[in-house]
Length: 332
Image 1 (cartoon, rainbow, N blue to C red):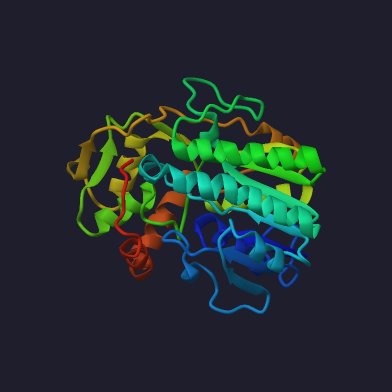
Image 2: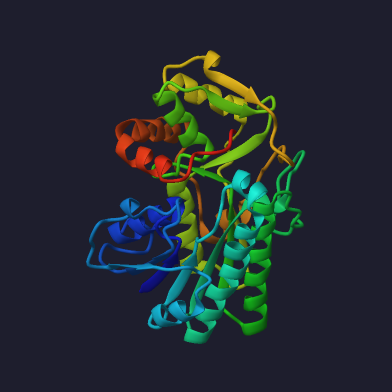
């Protein structure tokens, strides 16, 4: 099988690529998948997150809005897994146009290229943020899309464009919507790596409001296994929520990070809340569990200490990423 991975130098995309190349993912023995990474290498894309060389890895630097380049690259691929997106909520508040361009137009462009070149399978990777906020209970795949930030709105738009290509053109296309990811190689603008790296450098950690916002935390390894299950066995036109069942308030998570880093609550700095800050996310992922046999394997009690240890052991990676990003932004 030959797979094109857009955004494959980003956090989740690179983990998926490394897992494919190692034969770690279910149904793929080592040496059975050829991977093309298509990535613009913006501040959030890092070539160092991928093997420097690999006989089954091809790297193409390109913009997902560049139809002519995609039409050159895509022929001969069996599937596209589309990760490429602008993904940081805080940045979307000040640069919404960038998010609409990459996430909506970029998705449409990749879909159009896949359609014209006869790619057989397409998985569009999305987020639980398209559902908005939920006071109690959990979203199913039939819940309405009620996004509250420019980032979430651009991802909801991309989901609808993907759905339209599946319905109109009969593409074999599935959509995944995941909860908050964490793990190694995540850019230090995101909550967990930002807090860990701040503490490693002796800096305080900024918490929005009173820290009562609730998020569900999913290890990137579990997420990539779920995506691959959908790629291999997901039904055309189907949306699959991917969660973990492990939710915490931002303050609860912050306290766990403080403890793992040998710090105390004096290192917390409470800051003015984000505009339109969603209070709570929660996914009902029974569909992917029942249909495809998905089950998360990494608990937060295991994954969070391992993630902290990775950032402690790899300062050269995250310092280069942070200093190359025009400054890290956004509290929890």
